[in-house]
Length: 163
Image 1 (cartoon, rainbow, N blue to C red):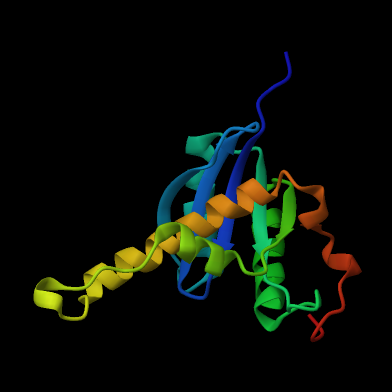
Image 2 (image 1 turned 135 degrees about the vertical axis):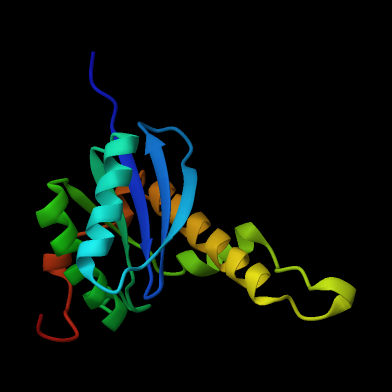
């Protein structure tokens, strides 16, 4: 019997990391959004724990590209982060073209509700809504992993800066 492929979908942001897990071709299940650490070692430690607990065998990371398919500055940051993750976690990585994933995730999650009495939502409600969008984006990244046309080989991209 072939072992299950357990994937961790990652939507990397400057402050938060949206996470989702899937087993083989099942629908992705969102995990709690992770706050970024001030140092890469903190991110590595948290993700190592998650990968161990979830028995992850592969990372699927959304790669932000410009609309013309070239590398974006955020994509460069994501590649550097992913290279360090791969070295530490010893897991294979698939990169997925994540253009428009945040917009698609926001549509999936829906509009943020207002605060009490029709006032603007408070910081806790805004943070929860952003975390839900990050989680939905990670789920979409895993769903998109099933489409080989969305797989990205970073070596084939036009880079915006030297790394």
